[in-house]
Amino acid sequence: MIEIGADTVFNNRCVLISEGASIRFGARCLIGPELHVMDSNSHDLRLQHRRQPDPKPLSVEIGDDVFIGSRVTILKGVRIGRGCVIAAGAVLMPRFEAPELSIVAGNPAVVVGQVSADAERPN
Image (cartoon, rainbow, N blue to C red; front, top):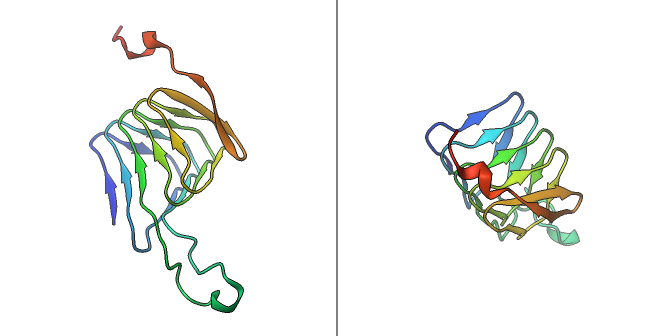
């Protein structure tokens, strides 16, 4: 299942793969080009079982008003809170959690800052 909130906009060449859990985008998200989001490993990682599906897919949750830069990879079980900014090229590893209004960057991704409170005030 893939769910996309109102007024969320995707740029070119995004790949969303849901294989048993779910991927959910909140409202008003802005998504850069070449995003990859997966709710599973696509296959079992154990050597003797690699031709079988991932036995433990995990849902991906992306909150409202999230900005995701280009070429970001989001793996299973990730939670991104409301208002976060995800820097270009970031790789969010399984079960990574970004608190609301976080700035996230790197491979593997880490929280590197906070979105300014001024960013929430309308002009």
